[in-house]
Image (cartoon, rainbow, N blue to C red; front, side, top):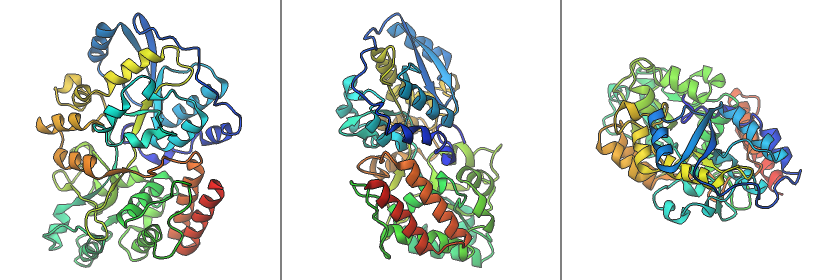
Length: 440
């Protein structure tokens, strides 16, 4: 996986630093150390990805007078550095990562400038469907720069080989089709679910819960899945039952999300991944060097209870730390970096010379449209429609500040249910109890 569509298994690294800081009073008011100067300055941009092409950054410098020093740090180390610098109130970068799952923490800690101080975030809202996921206490604290969201992928060749000619639109039909694929001997284990005790299991459950018509937490952080028959409860049962019924490979007990995508879905071992990553068809499954199913895998509108369901967002954003030296200049860079034109070019719309390594999906609808119209994005029209109409935040009220601890409860308990060490009912009960405790 690239840094943009990375495995989410590393989420909790550095989480203790963040959670511990919640009690240290390190938030405070607006920093007075930053300069409003926007010309003749050098800003540091720290993200977990390779930079845009040098020619693109040089053009930005020529037009603005702002020089960019780019620092590529792996995602989990980056979170630790952000937390350490903010806690010590020392300079780290002028612009850096704001992950969707950290928005609640960062908003409560007041570690980042509200982006509405520098950009017209209201105007951006209609162009960036995932912007609400970066809102905390009424302020946008980061701008999404990629359009990562969870999707369903299917190997149509295997479905067709099993005699399935109409793709499923409901979970009931989807499950029946998987059973048919298994019964016909097309794939012994047709469904990929990453049951390793890691973040990818949590996000898979979030997506499945949404498909069953529910949400995870309410605005107060209270669990919406504790009652038998509730969407989240049914989603947990469906996932664990799929393993017990032989629809999921037994070895998936120890398989993480990206591992399953690369070694199972990309190799034709399984026929579908219910909660896959957007962009994987073009960047993984259609690449001969990494796949044996080139041309066979496509996106499927995620099956729901009575028809297609929503797709949960998990994008990365970029924001301005309170201790930034040049916040106004950083804002100019963010505006440039997330423009529709640049996003489309970074993803290949203007040829290889302007490609940003690992960048697949623009967060702006206009960027997605341009990329699709130029034929540079496999499944682009479908992805654009999903982004515009179906991509929703996991937590409509924003991720809670205690999200890392909650996610750990999710994946450890669902993993335990999959191994059979606890019942699904007890696993859900334990997850709900954690949410109740953390939200009290």
